[in-house]
Image 1 (tube, rainbow, N blue to C red):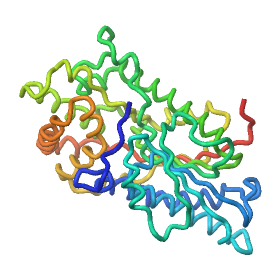
Image 2: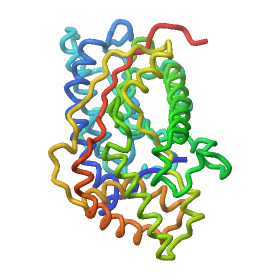
Image 3: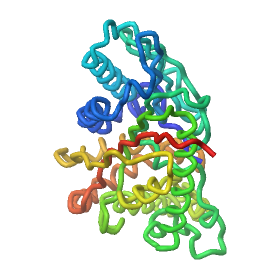
Length: 358
């Protein structure tokens, strides 16, 4: 199962190494504004000046990006209310729920809450593949850079007697069809569970915003920078075994519980769910396209995300030498990262239909 991002506010924390994601969220602001202006039906939602408007951010991590998105959403709602000629829209109260893995560093998150916020804040620990809120209580849900994390490693991957067994870890097997299909199937199951849970929690007409990193349609994983990452990451693990820091057996049993879908793959899964309509699906300008390649910066960003997974499997003493070596390998492979296509940042807007739940 996925581990939370690195907490705290230190050099390797997610809070200090998620500016790339934050820049994309800023670019998504215009799309969120348009969605709320055009797709949010205040009458259908039965919102008036005595209402409480409820927003949930799923996979919030430790900030500051979650606060940026929430602020964008609330500002767009306030503008919508003003344009609807409400006499006193400021009387509407906002409640925001911040959700993540139960082991997420909520202490750091809540210490960083903006003092000037216009909402009441609450933390909701739990896995978003399951229900988190009472029925028909949320008006808007946001989830940014979280849905690629799987609830578990596919069962086909963890056994040693199958073609899909992840021998030599993620270095080679991610490019084998049987492995890719197993991860894709688990992703499909998780997204279906996620959508069914959210369908119960959102009111009819409620909106859901999703930001997710996707692999471009028609391009093999091995021909993307994400494929280079898997290769370099796996190569570093094998080097650790050669140095005697860990064993090949330990490496063979290591897997990363995530899956980057293609846009068509994600669209196909969503369309099978009758409780949501896809109102918009759009690729955003890539956050890495204009960035200077700096191995230490990329390693810090990777470590902020994957340190927990590495530590859980290999132990805390493994982390520092591994990521030091990873920095060297990333620098050595700089030309490969610059040669291949980056994954894409995909914005998806969903609207809850009026269909009754079974």
